[in-house]
Amino acid sequence: MTDPFGDAPPLDPAIAARIRDSFTRQSLMDTLGARLDALAPGMCRIAAPILPGSLQQHGYGHAGLTFSIADSAAGYAALSLMGLGEEVLTVELKINLLAPARGDLLLATGRVVKAGRKLVIVQADVHAQRGTDLVHIALLQGTMIPA
Image (cartoon, rainbow, N blue to C red; front, side, top):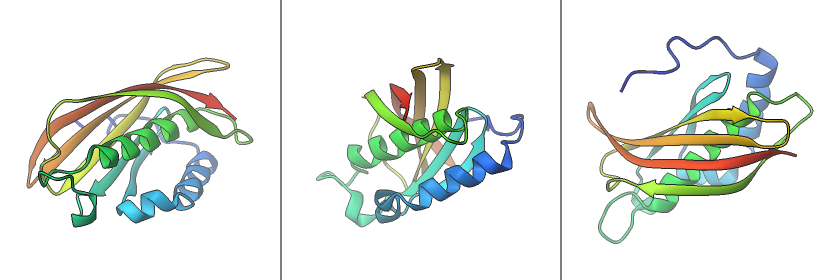
């Protein structure tokens, strides 16, 4: 997986600070051990360990973990393109689970597909990391709305 943040322009510091502040107020992300890993205009990456408390019955990372960090990554990607006085809410999301979440860490990379005046179409890819191996485990697509 190539790093899409490598060639991205820097995010306005005020917008980055607002997103970081918002992220720290999400108690679910704290519960999941997630961290904001990278930001750029129209993009956000969130990393979360696969902890014993976020496993499903077969020992893989739970789809709820995958969905939660993908939703937040996509939402913050959308927020990175909105004005300082705006917030973002999820309108709808669809996820395709491509493979079991095996590994130590999940990486959710959200990006804006189209930013309209009323709706923002987003996608997120989630990869499971085990050592140096990355496996694409989920693809999320959805719609965000400025609030």
